[in-house]
Image (cartoon, rainbow, N blue to C red):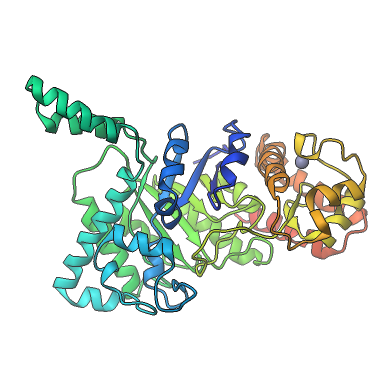
Length: 431
Ligand SMILES: [Zn+2]
């Protein structure tokens, strides 16, 4: 089987200010869709609902955070949950709402060992899924009250009207089943995931496809077992390797990422890789159809990250396929020159002062200030660069990566700047 396309790019929605940024980028090649963490949308429902109407998106239900001691959901007073998680907890209802703050966590083994608890958990799993398909507050919700009143007077049934309103809703492109982070297929956490898949497989299919999320530390799991457990239950899978850092992982780890994705794709699953940067975008040849990440920052999403929010400035150096803080970005810019013809970099030429002023205002790399230009540059140039590298197929793409690496070396950049390209080429080349 040969897959040829470059994966579609989804951005992980982080802060409200990003709406303006993405409003300015309407081409699907740069930004195909969005992943919305559930605790952010529950907090920004009113402003996000109209914005999402014209967009492709899905919701990350963030259910893993209620199981892991590493995810700190406490507000600053230490006695209550963070505001957005408190709202989400109420939305999901029990057993999530039964947790007592500040440190309460759910335990997969204890849920599995009690039929009552399991039933209780599955009931809330249904809430997690229905939340995704109904959370967008369309105007139709207000209008239907009025329609119902008028049409009921004319003798129409309310049930038909509600069904019509459901069809018109803004919906995500998939419904992500609740998931629990697991370290191996031999754990209670994995078993709980499996029970969730089994449960939903036996339910009537909604018009929006169900999607399983495989959230695990490393891609060394037993993929034959996972394929077997998923087969016939879902057609879509999101894979999330929280410990994989594209810049520092070894070739052996990256090869396991490839193998994991291709073993799912070979079994006819639609594969989405969550939390991926430029390396992940080269996995279209392994069957990855789409990839999600943040704009400029946090391409990788560690399991412990529970909040969105502002991030430090980082500039994407297209010739090196990675983002850098102030000092390294400036040095690489001086050595390699400007490689961007978009409006983000207009007027910079090779003027390093203008570059710093635009992308690192106040000459700070920890500035939490206007990151609009850095994100715009990332979203536009990243997509173009992926296309430039991979559009003529894999072997041409690998030659281009090799040329990029040699160019960086010849420009006098230390290997720390480009060593990841060497590792990637090795990982991509493995058969
Ligand atoms: Zn630019």
